[in-house]
Length: 355
Image (cartoon, one colour):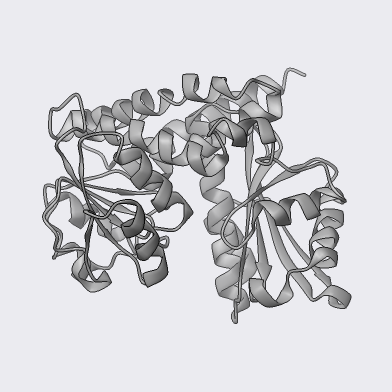
C-alpha cells in the first residue's frame, strides 16, 4: 500500500520524513489533525525493517491520538513520531538532540511525548534543543502523576465504568483481572489494581518483567503467554501490542469484559462484529487509556499536578456514556466513540471559522 493510501485510510494531513546520516537518525513524523490544537505526538523507537510497516504504525498512532483527545475534549490534535533503529545501539546525545532540532522545524505544530523505547533521560537530552516536549515536568512525576501513571489511574476509572454496565457492580473489589504484558503501563496498572481487593493473573513474553512483579507481589498468579487467553476472569486487559488478538484467541477467552491499554486489542475492525456475538463486552483501549492526554494537557496549560486526579474520573463518565449509547442504538462501541469524536472535531472546526 502506498503512503498516500495509508494517509487517506487514517485521514492524516501531513507526513514528514527526516534523516540525519551523521547520527543515524531516521524518523517519520505524522500530523493527523490539528483542528483542536497542536498535534500531541507519542514518540517510540523500534528496529523496523519495513518502511510500510513503520509508516502504518506511525499513522495509526497519530490517528488514535486525535480521537483520544477529542473524546476527552482536550485541545490537542493527533500526531506521532516513529524512530528507526535498535534503541540500545542508535540512541546517544547527538541523536536525541538532532531529533529536538527536527521537532523545532515544525514551529509548534507538534509536541513530543515519549512512548516505547524513549526514556525520561532521553527526553531531557531532546529538551536541550527543543521546548516542544511534554511529560517531563518534575512536579507531576514527584506527585505520582507522570503520563504512564496517569494512563493506569485513568484506566481504573474506565474499568469501573465497564464493570458497572456489564457486571452491575459499583466497585472492582473481588473481581479477577488477567493482564497481558507488564511493561511500564501494565506494571503501573497492576499497582493500581492492587489498591483494591482484586485477584490478578499476569503474563509477559519477557521473564524479567514477570520476576519484578513476583518480587513485589509474591502471591500473584503467573501463566505462560500462550495460556493467558483461556484464564477464567472477569476482565481481560491487554497491555502488549496493538491488534494482538486474533480470531483463534477470541475463541479461548473466558472473561466478561475485554479491553486494553493499547488503542485496539483486536487484529481487525471486522472482528468486532463477530466479537459481539460472544457476549463479552469489548471496550477499545483508546476510550479508557486517555489519562495521559489529561496529564499532558494540564501540564501544557500550567495546571497543578493535583488537577490530574480531579479530572481523571471524566473517563468513567465518557466510557459509561459510550457503552450505554452503543447498547441503545445497537451499534459497536468503537463506532459510537468515533462518531462522538468526529462530531466534536467538526463542531470546533466550525467555531474556529469565526476567527
